[in-house]
Amino acid sequence: MRPSPPLAMWLVRFGLALALLSTMVWAATRISPAAGNVEAIEENLAPRPAPTVGQAPASEASPFRFTIPDPAPRPAASPVGLRIPDLVENAPVIPVGIEPSGEMEIPDKVDEVAWYRFGPAPGQPGSAVLAAHVDLEGQGPGVFYDLRKLEPGAIVVVDYDDGSSSMFEVIARETYLKDELPLDLIFSRSGDPVLTLITCGGDFNRALRRYDSNVVVYATPIESHPAAAMS
Amino acid sequence: MKKLTLLLAAALLAIPAAAMAQTADGTVTVVHGVPGLVVDVYVNDALTLEDFAFGTVTDPLTLPAADYDIDIRAAGADPASDPVLSQTVTLPAGANATIQANLDGAGNPKITVWVNDISSIAAGNGRVTVRHTAAAPNVDVLANDGALFSNVANGAEGVADVPAGTYQVKVTAAGDASTVVLDTPLDIPEGTNVIVYAIGDLAGGSFTVAVQSIGNLQAAPTGVPSGTGGLLNTIPMWLIAALVLSAGTVTYGGLKLARERA
View (cartoon, chains in turn green, red):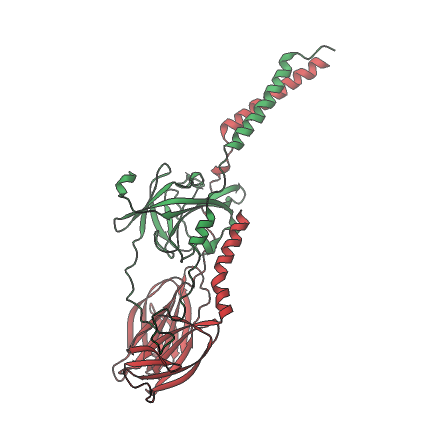
């Protein structure tokens, strides 16, 4: 039997090495599903303890006093625009409610961001929820397509209907299977202000045309800077 | 990591409920529905509310579940003098209650204790509660010209969950849509129980409403459906090309090897 010609052996070795190397490169460039400090966010959104007996100063004769509420404060400004450097140039924010299914409503346009209007506005106590499609059949990638690449430290800017703007800093990113999404935490209306950005992610089921996970980015307000610095 | 997140979240959310049950507290709000009287409110012989005027609703206060002696006197009256109204009231653990001074059907002042519905409200909805506590005949309550509660008598209430929004609320004499005693917009915020008290004396001209709001009763949406395109999982072209090339190379080289060895 003649010895194997070097060319055939090298072709096989080359082919196997190419397959191995390309698969490794692809695996290495997968985005990590989680980053940052999600425990800090959970502490931020913990409900504050209920008011207890004796919250007003008591006279010596009385262990507790009833109080009359102050007149209701002005409603907060609503968000109308979202800007994220290197990710979202300037997306319109639309106030939304609930679908008949009980899920949060999201407009059928990939370039629009939905704000859950029953919850707080960004900057108010609790979690302000902004959601957008990662992609839509027939419309291609959406404005949150690269949300899963947003790292802690990134800046998010919200523009309001009264002309003001606020800046937020990303603290954490998490990927949750949809039936493990912590809904009460994400839609909390008490606690410190948190801006919560949500889209779909994970694996896609072609038969059902749905992703199996949600990508959630949490951001907290930072001291106000002139909005012009963000252009 | 995700399981830990969920456990932490569940623990944090459970703490207030557990704390309430452990210390056996309830919540109390006081409403003044007797016209022509500014009062001091004493609880267990201690002054808890001074110069309380008709139509006013207090902030809620958390108190230990117990029986409480309520005495209502004219504002500034001697604490030792006979109260105008007096009643012992039971506050059950975990209850959200309203203690109200109001007129009965005959126009006599009394103390009424209501238990407020603080059960969870489906996402997107609010709750409207109407309490007839005025010296007035039975009424019908309409929202946006649709019947909401019918033939409500003094001392009775109606409770309904409705889609959150602003409603035009009309109160008419029961069965007589032409006799309108109230016609006002009412905002029902999502996740809030808006409690409307009809108070005063209709014949005497002091008929009006007082409103109490209990918020934070909402349920969260059941999900955030945000993608049907499937582009995230598309295998990139370069990887497909590399794998096709490698498969071709391995197959060609392998066949060549097999032929030359045979």
